[in-house]
Image 1 (cartoon, rainbow, N blue to C red):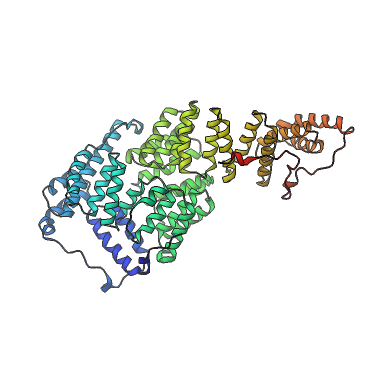
Image 2: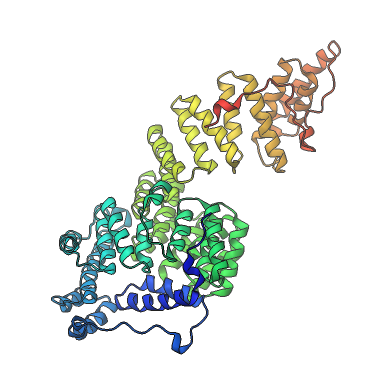
Length: 575
């Protein structure tokens, strides 16, 4: 793991830089970047009065535009974007020009959102576009060619290019903007949305600034490189940011991504103690409570968020819809709440994805597909949306489409066994058994969370009349289930025991067959077959003597019970 930037040795200088960039962002209406920098500055020790950075000096152009800028900023803060742009037209200072162009951009976004809501429901969004984008691109391109854009305006130019689906050009502009103004977190975040893999990340020419370490930690989390992300955040904590609620939240999200639910919940509870009125990342916290079926805690969180800000309807809708109502299987009501949430924020990723899940529960595949597609428009790295599309097309019996979308999900989550099992099922339906075997074995190798990969691999071997291989997989499956103490909850254990009983009987291993048959009697669906097999064994046992074998020794120790089964060569199935 690479060391942190040497600038972390001077936290006082970092604090001064944060205070300066907070002021610059506030002046330009970049509130989220200002909030991020403020939270980070709060985590550092306060500066003495004589240590505070000086305010930026006004240029002659700034002085001439001061009155217009002050008036326009007041309109901007009230979201009267067209009005703000009108009074800024003709201003010459860099600050006024940015606010002029940014007001026009936000006006177009606001009109687009209004049109989306008016055309309702959210699934009828269609191809509603920000009509101001093309004009903004033409004007900013001319300024860019002339070298007249500062770091903030380069950021806005990159946003416009990204919105126009010009990712390559947008990446170049964002990198240029970051070099011009390294401390603007918004530019780093926009760049992160365009980085698709680790190779692309390594190819970027980024400034060697302390904020780059925060960006790399964020990217590692986004690219599912959780070990690297956690190490990076730990280094940042040791460098002096131990009080940062941002870092705590990101570590909690990282643990959520690798399904370490208990650790993530502990961190979110710690975060709530330090920042009890926080709303950011609470959707992830509520998802964790949902997964753990913690209904009282979930209900308390939802009501608490409403009390924090009764006007913050989006968070209330998402919390209740995605967790409370869904947990109660009230899917129609959950979908209704998502639509309300999307009226307020059509770019809310969580609402689109979870609404797709609700439509899937209601068997409304057409609406589910549209919802998942909108989620991908918001964030192409949302593996849940790609996976949801694969499931939807699986219901529609379109395996080629399934394969495409499951591949996309697998690329985003290469070590998630659920994606690999879904891929294997798609290959199996397309009669590509060799590829299916690879996927199932890989799913088992990376840690099969649903304990289904070995079972599916065994059944595939069984269909192909590969009896030794099927027996080996069934035995591994039984060991896996029994070692987790889930044997009574897994109905498919009886299937494995039935097959193994018949397999050993055909191979004249009667002691092993008898043990399997006895185990079959523990399950209602296999009891009669187990008794029948025991009768068959008793008929031949007097004639043939076999050495005793403790077949299920692995249930109490670590011996391998398959020494009499022909060895499998699973190496050929490993990707």
